[in-house]
Length: 105
Image (cartoon, rainbow, N blue to C red):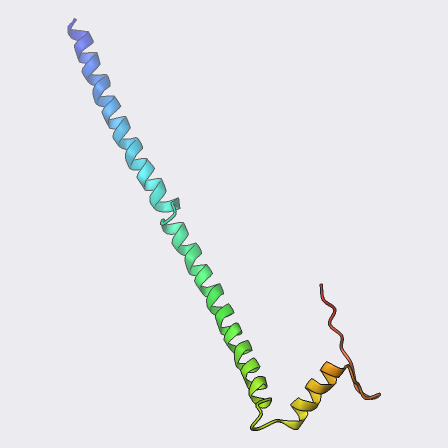
């Protein structure tokens, strides 16, 4: 009888420690690989770097577009830009012009 109670208490203690170790392990693994874990932070940092460089590229592209639009304003029209736009819209080309055609996908 005494040995069964002792065995039962030993198994209960062992089960308790096993459950505690499993819970700690679960939270430890999630702290490393979870949605907000250490690996996710590294991936977010890489994504931030990529998006920052794309933002810089888009800002340059927008500045170039704004500069081209400013050349076509009615109060100060750049003759070269006006000639380029007129040729493009009318599909007109001088025999010595080099034409590059962009085909839509």
